[in-house]
Length: 324
Image 1 (cartoon, rainbow, N blue to C red):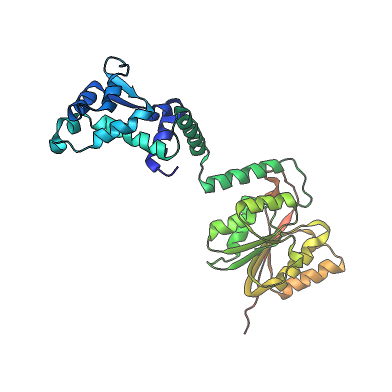
Image 2: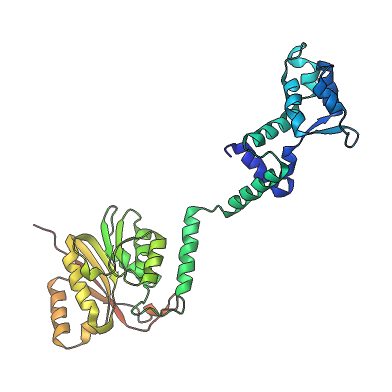
């Protein structure tokens, strides 16, 4: 079906009234005008024999429509202003266009017209804006996470995510990595602050990856520790358990391009524990010029999916020296 006007009309009428498009009727005035033009027409003789509805209207059988329309469109001796063209005009012409459009689409019966109208109405109701469909899909997937325990998953609260994005000193065109993306809260903050970024993410958990895919994120792996390459900015909320954040930060620094910026949320442990690993890490941080600040103690107590915690955390920023 390729006639836009017919599609619009079928949707407008709906399945309750679409059958009316399959009928072509003649009023008494229209019939008399055509009879004046063709007084001896056998087609009009058969029309005259039809029952008259409401005392003034004849509904043409489908087999008579073409013959009547042929007469209607014949040039009359009186020219365009003749009685037949002047009287048998608007209504018949409109019904004729609709009837012929339906015939061309194969909708040759009232039942077929009603079926087509119902299908078109269903399509019109189902049609939604793609961006809205994406938002609805993401919202549904995030709702499914409520109450589902995901090991090590503590979503970055919006205020903290915005703070981290601001520390990253973003510019259009930068290549940005989020190696532990969760459900994409940091990615959302980054792109809100600077939409013209090329952001790549990693995530191991399948349900969280599904959320990231629904958001349109560029997934390049399941975990950042296996990555090789260089990124202009790396922004991440790390797993804190077992001092895992130490290894993640040092590996991320190796992935950082010269002149790049690394911003990370870390647990408190690496900054006060006294085992050799934590002391060595603090010395390394000093050597790379890291700036470390304490986050709000209640920063992770708010979560839209119920994954909240009272863990204390810090934000770390490192600017890698440029070459030369």
